Amino acid sequence: MIIAIDGPAASGKGTLAKELARYYRLPHLDTGLLYRAVAKAMVDAGARFDEVDAAVRAAREIDPPSFNEKELKRASLADAASLVSAIPEVRLALVSLQRQFGQKGAVLDGRDVGTVIFPDAEVKIFVTAAPEVRARRRAAELSEAGEPMPYSDVLADILRRDERDTTRAAAPLKAAPDAHLLDTTYLDIDAAFRAAVAIVEAVRAGRKRG
Image 1 (spheres, helix red, strand yellow):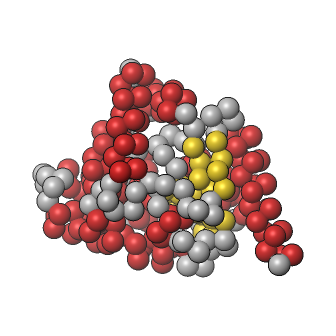
Image 2 (cartoon, rainbow, N blue to C red):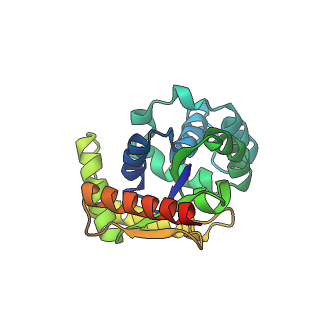
Image 3 (cartoon, rainbow, N blue to C red):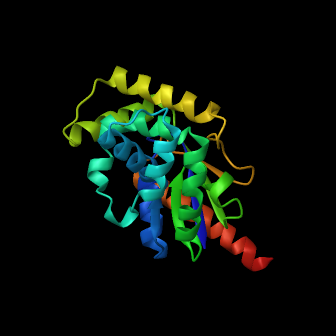
């Protein structure tokens, strides 16, 4: 079973994906880390983000098993990853890696999993929340990680990334036509998890009846 979870930044999709992967005993891939790894490789190499060849080369050389998630999730890489993810050639270079990871069943979260990577995924969930709520969540995460940032700056960053992700030419952020919408604005992680499991089980029950 492939569970595709998409949604904007700080919507809760990553935490939800991890919990679903644990519950259904499936491997999990945070596809956003792939783009952060590419961005970090470019930063380390001193490359500009408009250097397409360098970005594609970095995408082909990343090694997910060696990822340091804490390092890749630093706030300083967020905007860089968003810029890198808008490069069509980079997205294309990472498609096969993601499909290979999920071919035997997995939970993947990102922004184009249900629309591009696995358009035939058994379960598709599009997780969303109000920008203000997402900004508060991200600000809290940054504070806990020792990278405090003013709420107003976090909100501005969230809105900027939403605009970039939804309007880019390559695989823009959008819900797949058959995705189940899960709004977590007023849900804590436990409630969101229960709602997600209910969606998965409803889909599985429907397939069994069919």
